[in-house]
Length: 197
Image (cartoon, rainbow, N blue to C red; front, top):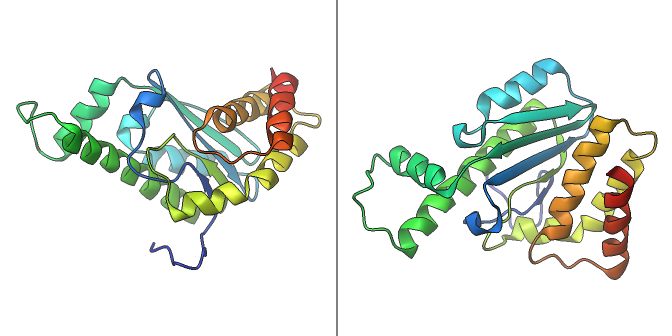
């Protein structure tokens, strides 16, 4: 799906950009969807079936929220994408190679998220940290106050599963790089973390 130059983006995609920043986590990867409507077990099964193999792991979902969590080491990711390129470990490892491999990783995540949006319309998605943000990323950053307001609204009467997903979503937003969060937004995020622990 080509993205137009007019900020005509299909949904809010926090951390859209390439390559993925593999040094910003200790093997942990969270991918969190908030859909426009509640999803069913059948929808969850479809989302899991089309997920890139390198991020398949545990999932948690309820209502319109879905979170995928996996622990994958840098070497596993590198090996996975070398294999996809039909290349062995005898290649020369340099910045260009790593940038290419982790751009492949970012492309797989983007393709997955766009495919998921065809299964169930996405309201907003929180991906993994990236080195360089895109126009879609910059557009999504302008929508952060609204995203934070929605997360706050979801906490009212929330059960433990909802709190767990919201807590991780908020942690991803608070710890992310290159956000232009206002003081008010940072305060909201801190309060949300406390209320969902």
